[in-house]
Image 1 (spheres, rainbow, N blue to C red):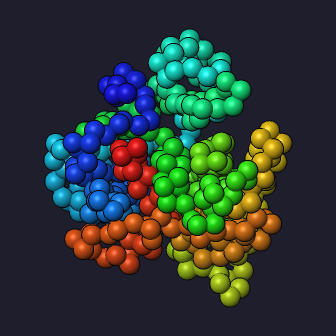
Image 2 (image 1 turned 30 degrees about the vertical axis):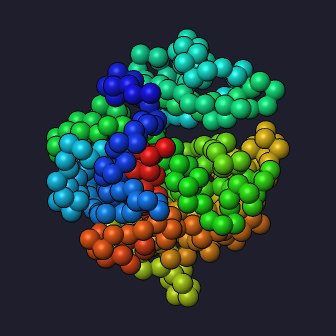
Amino acid sequence: MHIILETYFHFIKKLFLSQKEAEVIGLDIGASVCRAVKLKRRLDGFEVVRWAAEPFNGTDEKPALTKIIEKLGAISRSCTVLASVSGKGTLIRYIDMPRMSSSDLHKAFAMEADKYFPFPRETVHIDCSILDPKGKDKRMTVLAAAVKKDIVEARLKSLKDCGIEPSVITIASVAVGNIFTRFSPATCTQASLAGKAVAIVDIGETFTTLIIMADGMPKFTRDIFIGVVDMARSLSNIAGVPLDQARALLASGDVNGEKPDVARSIEAVLSNIVAEVRLSFDYFSTEKNLAVVRICLIGEAVQVPGVEPGFARHFDAPLVAWNPLEMIHISAEAGNRDGLVTEGRRMATALGLALSEYD
């Protein structure tokens, strides 16, 4: 399926075999950092050719995007760029429907989309994709998504102002689910966890995304609007320091309990995230009769010392170390391999976007 972006929102564009040597860029524009991965297919898998991560202040990501282009090199016409949107104004639903072809599904969904999304139809781009075409009892699970048009248009304008013409814009959580299916930890594969579920908790700058995977595909997605910035605000209030100073204190951590204000701020926010994640786990296990037995923590928060052990203390399900960059080739020209691997748990969206082109 290849549909013009400006007139229809879609998840994945098939890559023809003749294009398999082309380079692909996955571009993740977050609330305060732009991250990008340039990927190339090899006979034995995939290789990161170049990568970049650039912070920015405020709402203007264009200076960071300009630096990204400089680091990745010129973006040629043969290089496909995939970008993402996330957060408020984006929604994902998982819908049980009678089994039908993809073309019939799109016809039916075009008429019924208003039932699943709380947005006026004329204000959103929508699309749907069959997750299990061979579902039981002549039923199938459909992943349906909606994104407000003004969000997509703003992202397109920002990219085009920097000379970037994206082939696809998708929802970030779709990209994360995509990379998990390819590069999941050995203890979280479909074979090792038959009939059970894995939760990916992506604690970002301004919100946390929860994705629950089972049987090799996503089953549940939710955005929780609490993130690292809330930890900084909490610390700013508790310690009586400016927000930027609070961010620096967070980064310095509280491993040995020497900074009780930092520990209190992290725990106060983590407890709120944990409460929402628990509610989602309870709903999911009741609805799907599947238990979440592993948790993978990724995102901006993994750079804050104390977050991971603090989060782990609240759950019986073990936290599994998942860093997709540890499982992929990295070209010599990419430079700073150690830096890239260290960034790996915050690069999942960018890498997942690039991999989507090969699905």
